[in-house]
Each structure stands twice: as structure tokens, then as C-alpha cells.
Amino acid sequence: MSLFGLKTELECLPCFFGQITRTLGYAGVNGDRGRGISRLAETVIENASLEEVPARTTTLIHRILRNQTGVDPYRQVKILYNRIALDRLPALRRMAAGAADRLEGGVRIAIAGNVIDFGIYDSVDLDRSLEESFRLPLSETGFRDFSRAVRSARRILYL
Image (cartoon, rainbow, N blue to C red; front, side):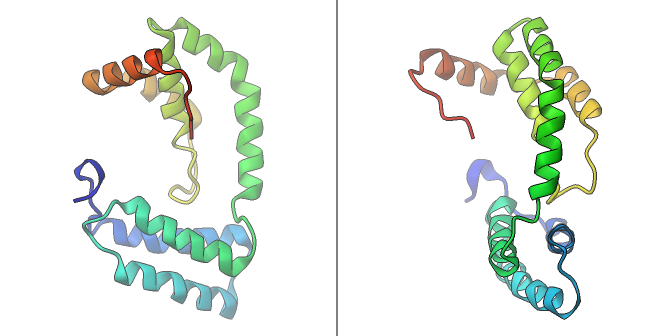
């Protein structure tokens, strides 16, 4: 059984193929070289277990793509979005501080930032993501347990 019961669904398969194409585009690879790399990555999809989380398959796909292209395909988009995040940092800090619980505000901002994934999405609407992350409810039990763990921790590793 996979983490938290999340399994790969059949609907995930076309997305995996799209990630290959998108990532090769970011890497600037196409033509026969791109087709060869695609075929290698497609073997991961063919052999993927539907019992595992989708992230397991995408991790393996992206490992092949990085190894075969020799580049970080997302380098430029990471630089751009890190710049955008730094430009917004003062406003984001105010949003977190303005929440009823500052930790919850920070968690909601982190959730909003988690949509910045160009392996999955063609584009990202940060404003919409922020609005939704502050409007939609968090899992009460999940956040309560997380909050308790944070408050009692001596160190936190945030990935």
C-alpha cells in the first residue's frame, strides 16, 4: 500500500507522458535525441506500479531526463520563480502574520507555493493559489498534529 493510501490512477498516465515532453522542452532537447530520451523515460511508465504514489514514477522519469540531458531543465524557471517569491516576501510575511495563527498562515503560504511545479503544470497562477490556500479549510487533525509537533520540536528540517 502506498503512502496515505494514494495510488497512481489511470488518469495519471497521460500526465506522465506530458511531463516527459514538457521537461525535454525546458531542457531544449527535441528531434531524434528527444525521441530516444522519451523512449527511455516511457519504460518507467510502462513498468510503473499503480499501487505506488504518482510521485515515485515522476521521480524516476525526471532522474532519467536529467541524466540523459545533462542539465537541470527547470533551472531558468526556478530562477524566475525564486525572484518572484523574493519580491513577494514582505507581503507574504504580512499575510502569515495576519492569520489567526501565524504558523497556520505560514503553512497556507507554503501550500500556495507548492503549486509551482512546472513538471506538472504548463502555467501557475500564484494569486489564485494564495487566495485558495487561505480560503479552503485545512485538515483539523492534520494541522493540529503538525502544530503540536512543531511547537515541541528542537529542530525542523523543511524540504
